[in-house]
Length: 212
Image (cartoon, rainbow, N blue to C red; front, side, top):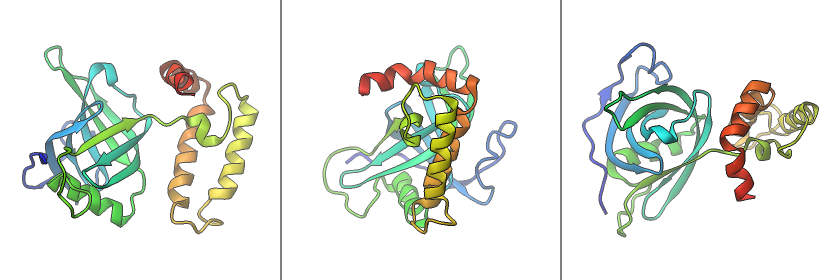
């Protein structure tokens, strides 16, 4: 199996402006220059996020919530993340940079992702020939809230409130409750805003209708 090329971990610095504010300053980033991604490549990973190099045609927008599926020969882990910043490439650069913040990883998943960045493995096995990879998927926000695409503002609000009552960490002791509650809040923050909802529908509505 071809493992991603990596360097020694380095302290994360502010780089340009506040682009790296989403990464904790006491963490290190691990370079993964050859880690394949369905939208480009993963440049580096920390325990709280990652930096992606994507083609301009696949460029997301700040605030987008996406799913990331990390796969090795034997294991698969899916995590959610929020796009925190986007830096367009120059006229000579083929790729742009995207900063992603992971949504509330537990320690087990965090350790697996860091191991994946260094070794190209989520688990301990290194058998097989499939190269490690990352698949990017934009979740269907309507499906997350349990409403149809043409739902009214009131229907979306009612569905959000009902879901929150079920998944709020104060009333749900499931290990996934906090992450699920955070995902619902992010979905609602997009769909409750007419401009953000219209932009989301314009960008992804056709994709979801074909998949239905």
